[in-house]
Amino acid sequence: MKKSAPYSIKSISELHELFHLPKPHNPLISVADVSLFDYENNREVWKHFSQDFYCVSVKQGNKCKMRYGQRYYDFNEGVMIFTKPGQVFSVSETDAYQATGFALFFKADLIRNYPLGKSINQYGFFSYDLSEALHLSETEMNVVSALIQQIQQELKSNIDTFSQDIIVSHLDLLLNYANRFYNRQFITRKPASDEVLVRLENLLNDYFNENIVETGLPTVQFVAQQLNLSPDYLSDMLRSITGQTTQQHIHNKLIDKSKELLATTNLSVSEIAYQLGFEYPQSFNKLFKKKTDISPSEFRQSFN
Image (cartoon, rainbow, N blue to C red; front, side, top):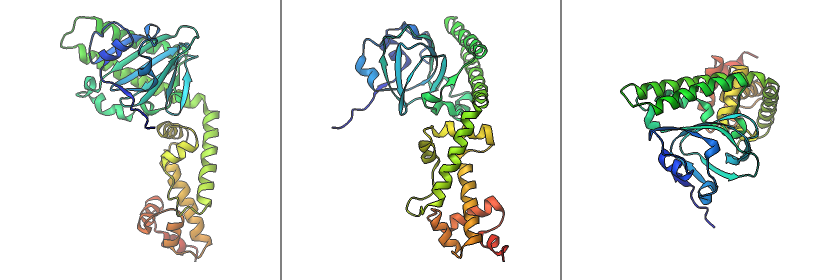
């Protein structure tokens, strides 16, 4: 049986209508009180839907359970969630206590002509799974709440030529703070991060110690999936504790393994390239020289 496509929510106004919320002050951006969200109606929509706008939300309580990525998530503590257009969700209402918090929705058109329109793609947290949400401290919650209140106040004010500039500047500042808070989270959760780093090293060791000609080179997506993390979150976490992305870790392990083969076997450079998963030896030569400043053949000759 073919699975039906998710219901697509095209506008912020439509979202407000589905949740039985008051009409938004601005069609491009809205701040909503999550305690007012009505999941009772339109149950079929909430089972499988996507939305054509960004969302930044802070929620507490278990009024709803949301599926995003590969798992469900209960909002049983204060967490901050970031989602982008086109991601697919499912939501079910629970019998637990009333949820509190806010949800900030904004269309890409709001920021398209501003620097934020380009830089927003650099924020990896818009691709994180909910299990990788930002857990706010009380101080951080106060900072976020103050910025949201400023956006709300501006939305309720009379529109003038400065309105959108001010709203976007507040939004830009909010995302910059979120970036700082995520970096803090990587540091305060360092033991968990160190565990992931060990698992990554073991995973790559096992991968390159097997015959992987048919498998090919490990991708960032493959590694992240094996570690039960999203690709962006894994790279951001690794960068915070090692200064290198997932792709750089993969390349480093590959070069280490290739050096071992060059130094301890009689395999040709082409054979080593194929054994490591390269489709073309030239690609292996190019990467090796980029990482070591010498060719594989020159490296081998240094042992003679």
